[in-house]
Image (tube, rainbow, N blue to C red; front, side):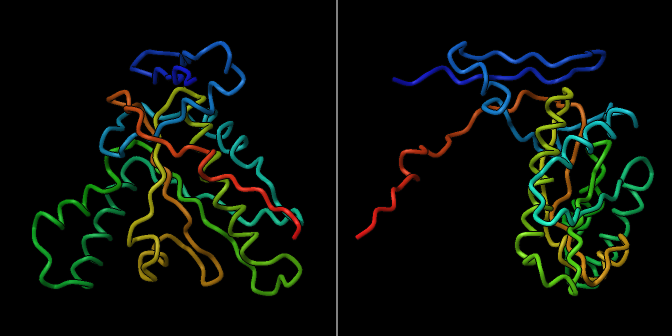
Length: 215
């Protein structure tokens, strides 16, 4: 028999907490089951203050990390820096495609201007580290992205994890100070949700689970 999916009420202006509604049978999983991504266009001010952000980043850093390498770091985009970064995107988009239209350029200009805060999660992949496979270090950095989504929602904010062409363009990466041995694994957009994001269909774990048995 199915159970009623838990839901979450996101922070609105002036709110101080987040309320989770869940089936009591599943209360231990309520916060996890209530996770939703809020589209970047639906995020607005206010975002977390510095103290809350540091608390969120601390929680997000509690991820599996083979060898204790801490193979990640954060770059914050906030305030006027978002618009300046948007100008870099416009310039680079024109270089990549001289025929790009005005509407597409405007989309690039505003791409990082909706949410009041974007945390760039950068994977630090030291090529000289031969003990811990690079893939494991990359997965640790990716885990930080998801943990930061959880932390943002726990603090009452909406968030979403995006990448896009800017995460892979060498010129844009240089603008962000990303080195050759580093990768952007996610732009985490964080702010106050304008909407309550709807639930979507989720995979049935029974269809994903298999058992290995010896021959």
